[in-house]
Image (cartoon, rainbow, N blue to C red; front, side, top):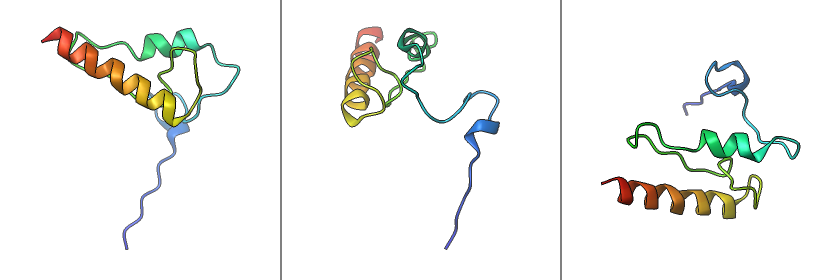
Length: 73
């Protein structure tokens, strides 16, 4: 069996591993914006402010990313 350990708090670009209730969702919304319409982000942390760290937030952000990908083509 192979196992891996990742310390996300030590990653210079991850800036941590969890979203907390006191974080400003507008900052996270900006982090979820595409980069040059070539790199898109989705996941439970990329909220529009409706949910935090949930399957619902992840699904909504995935839908938004796919819509953005299709509209940028």
